[in-house]
Every structure is written in structure tokens, then in C-alpha cells.
Image (cartoon, rainbow, N blue to C red; front, side):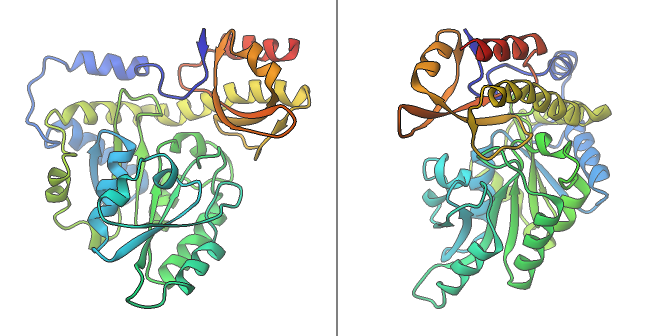
Amino acid sequence: MYSFLNDYSEGAHPLVLEALIHTNSEQTVGYGNDVYCQKAQEDIRNRIHNPLADVHFLVGGTQTNLTFISYVLRDYQAVIACDEGHIHVHETGAVEATGHKVLTRPHHDGKLTVEAIREIIETHLDEHMVQPAMVYISQTTELGTYYTREELKVLSQYTREHGLYLFLDGARLGSALVLDDAPQLQEIAQYVDAFYIGGTKMGAMFGEALVIIHDDLKKDFRYHLKNKGAMLAKGRLLGVQFHTLLKDSLYEDIGRHENEMANIIREALEEKGYHIDLPSHTNQIFVDLPNEAIEKIEQEYMITHIKPLDSGYTRIRIVTSWATAEEEANKFAEFIKRI
């Protein structure tokens, strides 16, 4: 049975695995102070044209989100997200467990808007409520859409005007970087106060690269990193992976490949007339299918059930990855056409 459940079912991209094996017997210092982490940090600083950016490597997305958000916010402050934000729906209250409320409003095509942020600010007016201090977004979103260059710019201008930090979760960042109207790494670094370059869902065995741009958010972060149990002793395993992913545009190549594989499947679904929720060109597809069609699919493939709909339909999610072979994508597309 072939899996389209997620983009981290497989281990790691062969070039990443090769680099880990090649460096396996080397002896380095720990906790991210090794030469490979330093190389990867320089890779990222060069990519964003910002030699002063702080770069830290963590193991996973939820760990990165809760560690950074809890570091930035004071006890009485909160973070703003849309109602489909990862920190709100898929992190088991991790941010709240650090003592910070997640304030949400309905999404627009999976995204947070200035209007939603404004509404929250205007309803949190005094010391009897938590104080909104940060805005959280993700690129790509939980629903497979993405922020365009202009949309990110608008959010950036608004948050800066209102004294809010803007934090971008880049767990699936590579899927967006290859789209023409999406912001590139250098632009992201100009528009946000911090972001991370996802590895776990982008071909790494594990790992995320947190990039802190705003000077006020840099001091003593490593103390907090250790305090939250997020400092990996064998930190070089993260450095090796990101140094490899950022070499020769491998990161973008992975994003381009997974998008192309998703488009093969997406076209087959559209040809059959099935409704695709919030169409986009990233590696996640949300589609409404008759339950009998889903039963047939699940005899051969693994997919995610999102929610039941009226009239015997269910919304499902199909996800492609660096490891999705074109042969498998075409085979699935042909399977869909025969249903």
C-alpha cells in the first residue's frame, strides 16, 4: 500500500543520508558549536543576505514553535494565529502549556489577514486581557495555500506599525519558494522578525533552522533553548543536513518536485470533476470525494480523512514529498480516473 499521508513518511533524501554517512565517524564538539552547524549558518546568512542573523537548529516544528514563542512573549502576552494555524490545531496545546494564549480568528483561504489581526487588537484593550504581542503564520499554510509576496509585505507593514512581532513557520517552506509570486528567502528575512526553514517535511531526517532577524530577540536565546530541552547534544547532525539541503538549490529542487507530483494527481481529480478545496500549486491537496470512491482508494493507498461532509462525501488530504516517484504519481492519477 502506497502512502500519500504526509511528507515525512520516508527517512531522508539520498544526498542528505549520504552526507550523514560520510561524516558519521568524524568527531566534533556538541550542541551546535561544530563546523557543520557553522557552515549551515553561513549558508543561510548568505541566502538571506543578512550576516547578522542568528541561526539555531532544532529537531522539530512543534518544538521550534513553542520554544521561540515562549522565549519572545512575557507572561501576560499572547500570540495571534488564524483558526487553522498549526500552533492552534495540531500542537496539543504546546504553546498554551508554556503559559501563553493563542488568539484566533477565522482564516481566509487558510491565511491570516490584517482584518483578523485588527479585530483581535481592538478587542484586547487593557490589562484585564492578555496583550497581543506576536503574529504567527505558516508558509505554506495548513490548507496548502501560501502567502504571496504582496500579502506578506502587507502583514509586515501592519505588524510593524502596531508593535507586533511577525513569526513565520516554514515547515513546508520549500514548496512555496518555487512559486513565482511567493516571497524568496531574502524577502522573507526583510518582512518578518523570525522564521524557520523546515527540514523534517523537506527531505531531512529531522530538523528545523530557526532564523532570528530582529536584534531584540537574539540575546540569550541559547539559554532558553537549553532550558526547554531543545538543544541537541549531537547538533552536528542538524548542521550536516541543512548544509546539504542548501547546497546547489537542493531545497528548492525538492519543493519543485513535490509540487509537480501533486499537480499530476490534482489534474486527475479535476478531470473527474471532484471539488478541490482551496486550489493551490503546493504539495498538499484537499479534495471532496464520495465515500465509496474513498473506500476504493484506501484498498491501494493511504490518505488522510479531514472531515465528513453532506451527501455521503468526505474531505481528504493527499500529500506528496521529495520521495514521491513520478511513476507512483502517474499510477495514482490513473487509478483516480478509473474510479
